[in-house]
Structures are given as structure tokens and as C-alpha cells.
Image (cartoon, rainbow, N blue to C red; front, side, top):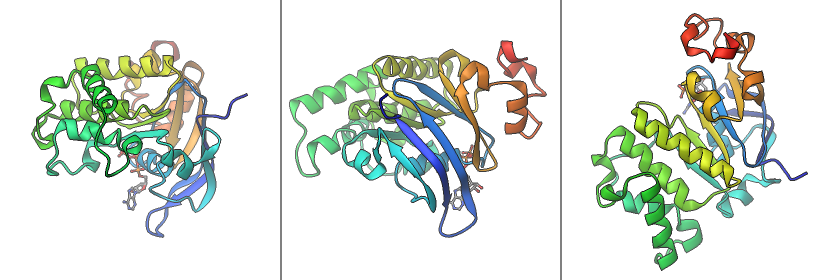
Length: 255
Ligand SMILES: Nc1ncnc2c1ncn2[C@@H]1O[C@H](COP(=O)(O)OP(=O)(O)OP(=O)(O)O)[C@@H](O)[C@H]1O
């Protein structure tokens, strides 16, 4: 069997030597699958992404990407990351096309100019997220949904094997949300692997093969969506509070 796209084993992480922000987290994602990452604010979702990106070194445990170290996977350009909007400096003076071209940087080398193939890949990524008309616009002059599309295009241009998306659906309209889910489904059908955090429980079953539930800074459980999104599991994830008290937000078959 091929190595998992992502294998997080017993990983603990802390920011600046403080208390643990991830506690013995374990999660595995097979190639070609989409895994939704679900949990309350502060549960540890962004920390998990930053750890897989190599921004935060684990204090214990290990992370492997397609059977290799994070450093190897990063150098090979295998991992693309779409951060939460709050994590981006929107005053930085770059255009949408510049941002998307950054997705090609690993292939181009820092000082090389984009080739015709790089430019074509950037244009294709812009087209796929319907952002061609905004290519020359400064990123600070975009709406929230357009910003998400621009960073998604950067990830597409990178042509990575593993995509990490931190809350891509926050504050976006229905059209953008559908554009994103359709793209993720397309990418997975093409063999890409996706880990995506979301607070929108209602849509999980429509596009996620797997769900990982995260609470109190660790992964409670991970598995196929229908088997994992059970009322008891959701109660553990959300401390017995919402969304169990709002049945409309729970997928039909687990109500
Ligand atoms: N830069 C930081 N320095 C210190 N502690 C942090 C930092 N960022 C997050 N934490 C802490 O780490 C834990 C996990 O936070 P994290 O940001 O991973 O949660 P999250 O699940 O992504 O939340 P949200 O849904 O609000 O984005 C929390 O206890 C949080 O307070």
C-alpha cells in the first residue's frame, strides 16, 4: 500500500514554550481523499496546519507527508497552504497575479523569471477560481471571498499533492463556497489530497470523504464522514453544546 498523504503520529506542539497547543494528536489521510477538520474555536486546527507546514516543530511525535519528512515535502513543493484570512498581511503591495505566481516559486527558483509554462499555469489557476478579471488588482483591494479565491488559485498554481485549507468557507457567499467545494472534489478526483477546516457542518457530507474531529487541542477521532459524524462524537467535540442543540445543522442521517 502507498504511504499516506499525511501521517500525524502522537504530535504535541507548543507556541514559544508555553502550554501545549496540540496534545498527542494522531491523524492519517490517504491519497485522493478530502478530510474535513472540525472543532470549536481554539481546538487546535490552525496549529495542526502550521505543524504540517513545518512552521511549528513538534515537541514530540512525528509528521510524515507521502512517507517523507515535512522538510523533504516542503522542498519538493508537495504541500500547498491556504491560511486563514487573518494570517495574511493584506497591506503588502502585491497583485493577485503576483500572489498566484508565488505558487510557482518552488519550481522557478527565487531569482528565475516565470517561463511560458509558469504563466500558463497561473492563468489557468486564475480562470478556475474566476479571478482573471482581478489579476492586476492589489490584494488589499479585494473582498473577503475574492481574497480566498486568490489564495486558492496560488495553491492550484503550485500543483501540490497535499492541500491544506484553513477555513476557506468563512464569510464567503454561496457561489464562492460552491466554487471551492467543486474545485476540491475535482482535485481529489485527480489524486490530490485535501485537509480542510470548516465550521460548516451541514456541507461536510456533500464533499468530505473523511472527517477529523478535534477538541481540547487533540484529535478525538478520524474516519469516513457518515460513520464519524455521529451525535455522540459531535457532543464530545462541541462539549455537549451547539450544534447538537440545533438539529438543523446536523446531517440528516445522524439526527
Ligand atoms: N500564536 C499563539 N501563541 C500562543 N498560543 C496560541 C497561538 N495561537 C494559538 N494558540 C493557542 O493554541 C490553541 C489552539 O489554537 P488554534 O489557533 O490552533 O485553534 P483553532 O482550532 O484553529 O481555532 P479557530 O477555530 O478559532 O481558528 C489554543 O489554546 C490557542 O489559544
